[in-house]
Length: 220
Image 1: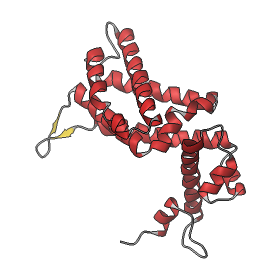
Image 2 (image 1 turned 180 degrees about the horizontal axis):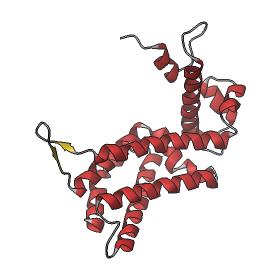
Image 3 (image 1 turned 90 degrees about the horizontal axis):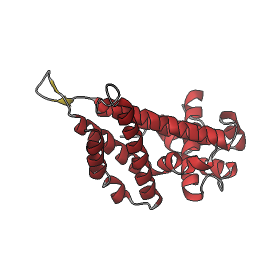
Image 4 (image 1 turned 180 degrees about the vertical axis):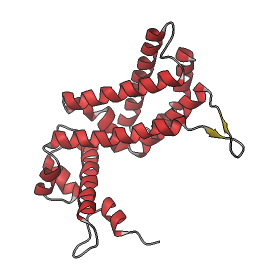
């Protein structure tokens, strides 16, 4: 099946000469390419060593095009970070979907299994989108306080989801269980980061079982 001009534009430079893309599609294509170039460049060089010139070279756009959409390298980084966190946030909705049973019915999911589904999606997504994952987990520390605040807000959201999964957000001992959720997220982030830095995809995916066991010990 032939690829549509819109999909092609999203993945690579725009076709030369006349094309049938709308202005919105052109801008969207440029934006996706610049965000992707930002992630790829910072994976290779790190935040501090990545210049705007490197981003626009990899994206195949002009400096004018870059500054039409982003105020600075930091602004581009933050918007790339937002795109990554939106992708991760979508995993929460997927993990909560009930399991299919017989037609017209659903089966309840045990907290452990819901957490496992969420964690598996999270680890696989990080492995498949490793450049964006490094933005979120590694380069964010070099990008300034606004970027770091957004990272911490996501970690709180993840902790909230875990608390809801295990019913740890209310009742006696709720504060202690909430701390356990935050500690679990922090531990997972540290373990994942180490494997991303080492480019160890097998080790990244292998974190599923030990992290599920840790969650059950803390919250089950």
